[in-house]
Image (cartoon, rainbow, N blue to C red; front, side, top):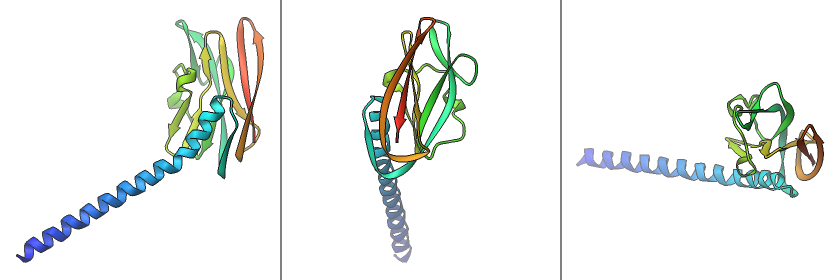
Length: 158
């Protein structure tokens, strides 16, 4: 009988630990929601506000045309910027070698949300910021065309 009590106590402790882990995980995910929402607003060309300042990081990448599509690479091609909000990694090498469209331009990585440059037809859109951290993000677009390719830079003022 005593062994059954100990077994029940262990099961209850494991269940309580699992419930606490789920609660912490859900809290973490919901704390990411404002960051994801802000990044999606910026990607759509709309202003965004966060209640607490977040780090802003920029990455230089290149789009080149190969095999009938634009491919994001780490060298050679049209220079573009990737904009990161939050605690972003030093490198985004694992995200290169792909084509991004407006529908998949927002990439969530742990505590970081990246706004990837995207291509549609002969138009390439990329994002760069005027700050290293901020709470208010106001995008403004500038466009230039050269050799049949339109490059659209969305400058995010913060």
